[in-house]
Image 1: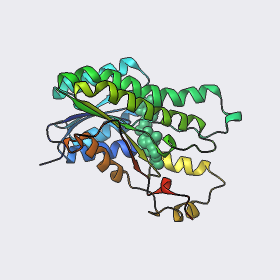
Image 2 (image 1 turned 60 degrees about the vertical axis):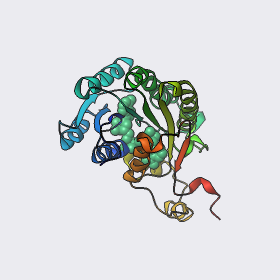
Image 3 (image 1 turned 45 degrees about the horizontal axis):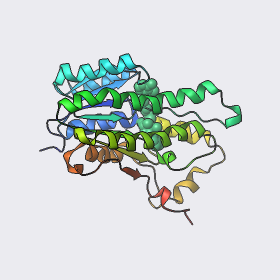
Image 4 (image 1 turned 180 degrees about the horizontal axis):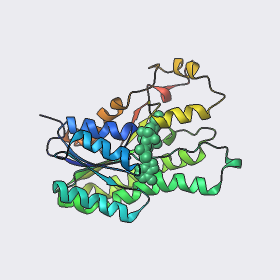
Length: 253
Ligand code: NAD
């Protein structure tokens, strides 16, 4: 018996990093998954590794309404329903406000925030038809605090928290729950790139200041996402879940 037996999930940004981990973990818990990403070769390889019985890859840019329609149709055609949406796709651009091109600021909002909203919009009908569902929006600790160089990223991740709460209010009557997840540092290419941008921060000192003094493995976030996707969290909606090794619990002294 898996936590997600019988459920069909669409996971965005599933070609690598946490999205790839979520897809594999969901399948291990009994789900069938549609993996969307703009990285076609890598995404297809993840789906091939899982096998056709339980997964499909679809080219899916979360900023495109047309791609959203194709991704949701893929779930319905391949597996007959849609129960879970994980809005995981995201990008990070590190730059001081005065140096950042407005186009870059807009692109971060477009992928991380508008993409999430477009997904919820597209999922309402099929989830309602399925008798309800669960939407898990991946925000960040930067959905609670800002950081120098991350104005666009943190604006987008604060926004994801707001969309989550409005959607929870709106969609409860259809049996659709909506929650947000807020990881701290997780071992993926995004974290490596981000760490390289923070040239003034000593990584060893940063890690030592955390109650759990290490980065997370992606699967540690996948387990939380799977809990929220499953019926085990049946009374939980509009809520925010930190998985940050205690980073935001205090100043570290
Ligand atoms: P990652 O860069 O490894 O993976 C992100 C995935 O999203 C990639 O496969 C990428 O191709 C895909 N993507 C980017 N733009 C896309 C688009 N327009 N349409 C569809 N897919 C697109 O990063 P990750 O660390 O696995 O990040 C996953 C999520 O977790 C992101 O939302 C990120 O902001 C969030 N997050 C990451 C960390 C961390 O420390 N790694 C911490 C907090 C939150």
